[in-house]
Length: 264
Image (tube, rainbow, N blue to C red; front, side, top):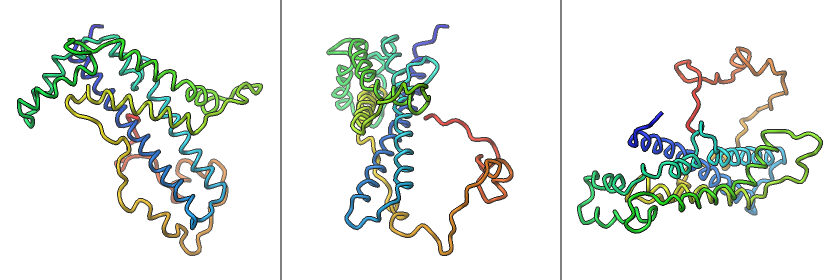
């Protein structure tokens, strides 16, 4: 099936926007995690039980490596940052100087002098004066993304998503530095192509400033007087009507519909 160039570009933009939401969430997660880590290092910090610290660590690591894996996914039937780059290599004509300049000209908030000055921004993707995006440059970014992701992919697939028999994964691990490096590369790629998606604009910090008051639960006791931890229960006590009768929330929208899959 042949796709109209404009429709193909719109599809590319929608996939990029989904990746942008996903990746900024990953950087938001890291900002929260690093802040909590600094709290724990403070001289006056309460010493947390290993159950709590291990739980926080597992949540963070699983969420982040799954997110990196999601954005580096190479399958054609999924949406990812890697898919966006692959599309540019396959169909470089959709990312044209004419399309880039037309987007700038359509912005009424910019005067003609400013528009003329920022149109040269397409040179970052094509080279001076060329009409379409440079495929070799995009392929170099794909190669960087793929090589950086390799360690995270192995850890995610063989440790988190699968359980190899016969100790086949002994010695396979992921360091904090490797995870942070993978996040940094994914973030750098997102920022680079933001200027192609939004001509004349530059993406600033990937981690948004956190709202005031978000640390309140760490400043005051969480436990009300007389609170007793929940006992362990059988699985039947956690599903269906039994869960709702015990005060648990029903996992559905307010109108009673089932939850839908998010873009991320």
